[in-house]
Amino acid sequence: MGETLRSLMPALANKTYFNYGGQGPLPTPSLEATIAAWQRIQELGPFTGDVWPFLEATTADLRRRLAGWLGVPAEQLAFTENVTSGCVLPLWGLPWRQGDQLLVSDCEHPGVVAACGELARRHGLELRSLMVRDLVQGPESAAAALTARLEEALTSRTRLVVLSHLLWNTGQVMPIARVAAQLHGHPCQPWLLVDAAQSLGSLPVAEAASAADIYACTGHKWCCGPEGLGVVALSRRLLAEGQPTLIGWRSISQEGSAESAFHADARRFEVATSCLPLFAGLNRSLELLEAEGDAQQRLGRIRTLAGELWQRLGELPGVDPLLEVAPPAGLVSFTVAGQAPEAVVRGLGRRRIWLRSLDDPHCLRACTHITTTTKEVDLLLAALEGARGQDRSNE
Image 1 (tube, one colour):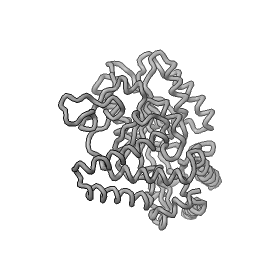
Image 2 (cartoon, rainbow, N blue to C red):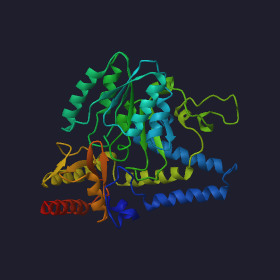
Image 3 (cartoon, one colour):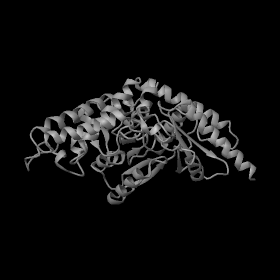
Image 4 (cartoon, rainbow, N blue to C red):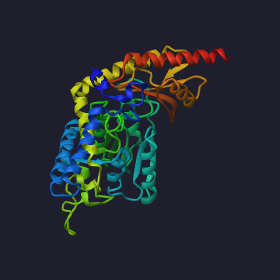
């Protein structure tokens, strides 16, 4: 699995790549689909009566495909430019009351944390932290611990819980459907916002996406689509209570009427002009992933490679994986004793081996996808072992 897709990615021809959690390589057919859409728009005329059916069909095709991946009806999906806007636009449209509490996990991306902080400042809300960073044991044990912590943290004023599906720093998977059921049983039934930046394309997501109130994804990471296009799945409850925030012609049901109402479905959280050729490119990337197997089969391949990398990292002197067990998905975070993560990244980059450093926790992160090869794992491990050997000889 993955060999065919890998052969379509020019970016993988001359480097050893472990940065899918930052951005996935774009397959050539996806680039060609994007270019073909640009060309077709120009042939039809960028603002003519002839072009609109093509634009609408391109948008509808991708919306239907993503609805299948996310396990929700197409009318519950809104297109965005990225994960952060997918989180923030519906979040700011909820009916907040002064004194409401926002419970935010300590493994959320700074962009989402900053948005929650500004929301709290403007509306007089209280920010509270939910500790999940130390949940480094097996998924079942982590889920049980999370359930207990959440029960203790919830109060009569808790109105929102923010929790990523796949934690971008430790690589642990959070039991989103289980959390959603727990919140549903709480007297206040807090909203559940899920940052799914690392989930779509790496994990089966339908159960989680259909359980959350806000499930925000991007197409340019594990989906290996073009950057600049994301999607958010919204619950029926949120659509019943949430109001549009940043508003444009795509938010309203009839552009030509000044009296037009907002869309009744998730499109009310879309804003204005997007780059339509990107829709064709992402749709092609999703098709290519589907051709490699279903979501569970792809996860099996990802986990096998991540597990091999995790195990062999733990056998290297001075190298410590963050998780105590093999990763449940494709994020493998670790530290190297006596070496700053940034220095390790620079040294590996000189050998055309690419991973990244993280600030919190201060560590290294390597990502395995279905296109990752055992040879790449070998190269990374050999480079790390060589660097450690050189470091010990200099002591």
